[in-house]
Image (tube, rainbow, N blue to C red; front, side):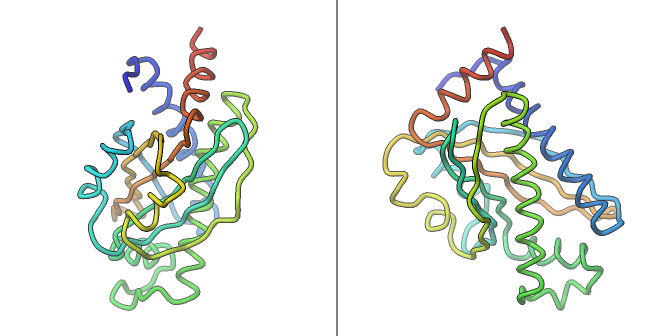
Length: 199
């Protein structure tokens, strides 16, 4: 799918507005400065998404994901390699990274972080484009990327926004990925809404 430079810039701006709000909320929650930056955004078809798995991380990954529906329908996820997930939680909880096994408290922390980040992004898209979106309850999972994100319900046409994310907590940087999968014609609806804003 070919997008114009203006459309791509608009998508990046929507995501950056969302992660900016999320970083502010997280900073207030733990009373420590958190910077959340998205240096790149890729728009991928189902076939090209599979080719990006090596960039996301192989093996078992940690993710918080939630479904969304309304003007747009699909799944959003915040995905980390497990060592990055453990390191992020340790930084947020001021804990020793060597003790960062993902027990129920840590899973709860990651779930909250994922919920804040994803909700921030989807809220930005919804508010700026004036579109209604409803969300499911966020869930934490550990699995391979294919099993976790690209399930049987996505056998046909999907478009994915893959945004590389940098979390910085007091000079320590953790890398992850924000993944927005739009079902069928939802991405076309997103582009129409963006085009209306650009007009």
